Amino acid sequence: MTASSTRRTTVTRSRTAAVGAIAVAGALLLAGCGDQTDDSSSSSDTASASAAPLADKLPADIKAGSTLKVGSDIAYPPVEYMDGGKAVGIDPDIADALGKQLGVKFEFQNGKFDQLIVGLQSKRFNVIMSAMNDTKDRQEGIDSDTGKKAGNGIDFVDYFTAGTSILVQKDNPEGIKSLDDLCGKVVALQKGTTSEGIAKAQSTKCTDDGKKAITLQTFDTDPEALLRLKQGASVADLNDFPVAAYNAKTSGGGNDFEVVGDQIEAGPYGIGVSKENTELRDALQAAMSAIIENGEYAKILEKWNVTDGAVTEAKINGGS
Image (cartoon, rainbow, N blue to C red):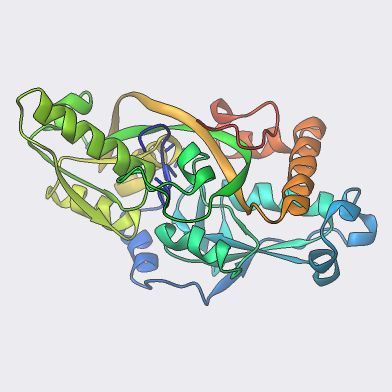
């Protein structure tokens, strides 16, 4: 999911760059499935296109098919995760509300986070909805590690705001309070995320300050990183605030983890859309604006206790 926002560099999630997981052991069952991009789980049925107020804004092919395929790493509760074979969470609920406006069903397809942009550009799905931070690097197709053009950029319709949090073992045995306290220590996190970019930048700062670098352990899924932290093999996991807070609240009945310090570099989550598909992008923006105005958006955030991450308008490419 650069350090300019949280989950998620050019192929990074901050899933950051606001509360978020099912017990680690349960989540690991999902991680064990590997790249499940051939599996799909749809959100609940939406209104028919004939009854949807914004259906005419959709591209003709999507409107005719009545389905919008969504690429997502569905192991990131409470933003998106599997429950009873179905994708549930903040993103699927917002997708349902958008679907009612557009008259289509949002069908979530599971995949590795760092491969979602590639999947979008190869037209495996129509959009990305996976706690992905809207960043300039992603908009422009820049590899945040090299600073060079690495591929085509994508557009975003912004729908939420979150920052990165530091998750540590319960009672904080290592006394971690900020990024500076991670110098010379082992940190586990999901690769391809904005959190990884933040950790790399902090590691450079550590060495510039004459301290030891951070030892980064990166994993395909966040539950794998959480397990390392739970086992004491790392001192922290950097994660989007809603996800970190959810894990702190739920994992081990609230006895496994806790969040320390303030949110880092809060930025917008965006629905990723190909730059070639401006019609779909604009339809999503109109639908997002509609659910903000009619109150459905606020109800969803209240349900998941993440109202602090609300946006007041659906900006296009509002990330920095």
